[in-house]
Length: 150
Image (cartoon, rainbow, N blue to C red):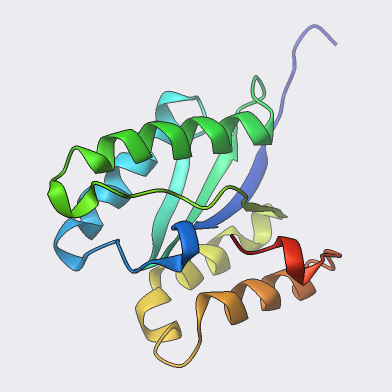
């Protein structure tokens, strides 16, 4: 086959370092838009970006030319530098070192979009840590609690 045809829906999840509540409401839309723009720039078209004060969810189509680890590194690294430029309150802004990345079937992409859109309501009664553990269980990811958090 002379062509490479790929469509990988990826649900990327990562938090601020130590889950600090640094995604301030007045900057939230701008930060989400910037993250989505980075995904698009790296040929990984974004379907939805959202999250809460201490973490981000991105649903995108991973570029056939990128490894997952490279997309996460590029998005987190570029956005961290940019967020620090937003003002002195972001001087010590960092993302956590790791991330979670989960494949999503095309048939479930709309469900993940709705899940991301509903983050504020979702987190009225659940911490990021509890949410992330639940996602790991759903995708049957083995993990060691000692190494999941910063």
